[in-house]
Image (cartoon, rainbow, N blue to C red):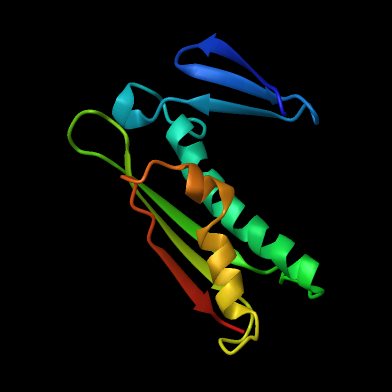
Length: 137
């Protein structure tokens, strides 16, 4: 179990503190929903969580298999909200640039673990999650 303490700071801003590390993040409502957009919105964090979870699980898999997952791996995550109520995330698009060759022996498994990371499996099935892996090594 991990506990995260959250404090509403006013002005549509929150501060969250990660219990084990005491690391803090702040959120703001997005500009299209009464906020100033001065920090990640809660739904931005959800999309960010998907991307970071995917690449983290790929790196964990690589470590368990005895090879180094490249530190230069880059991701682009795009979050699209619904245009009609209720307001929710409709789609999270992920592009992963993996600096490994396309014929890497573990390619299929690395993609499989990314697509089945805990965040991907936790999101509602109505949230579209297209992923484009680009093997650029």
